[in-house]
Length: 125
Image 1 (cartoon, rainbow, N blue to C red):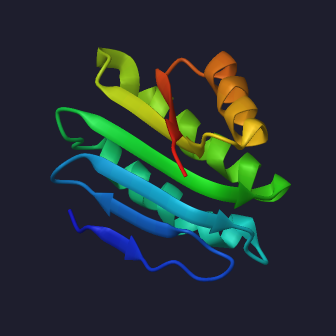
Image 2: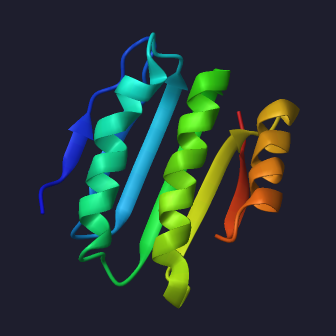
C-alpha cells in the first residue's frame, strides 16, 4: 500500500499516512474551502489501510486551528480508527500549544467521545 502525502498549505494541514510504519500525521491548519472534499482521500486511504493495518497505528495530530467542518471530518477519521482498534493497537497523540486551552479542551472532548486512547501532549513555546 502506498504512503499518502499532502504538503501543508495556508489552509490545509500536512498529511502523512505511512502504511508500513503505521504512523499517520496531520499537522498545521485545517480550514479548507471544502472539508469533505479535502478529507475524502484520507478516509478512502484509511478504508484501504484497514484491510491490512500495521501492528500498531498511531495518529499524531498537531493542529494549530481547525474549523467546524474540519472537526466533523476529523471525527470521521477517528471513527475509522475506532473500528481498527478492536485489538487495542491504535492510539491518538493530540499535540497542542501549552498556552492554547481551547485546543486542549477540544482534545478532552474527543477523549470523552471516542473508544481510542488519546494522549494530550502539551508543547512548550
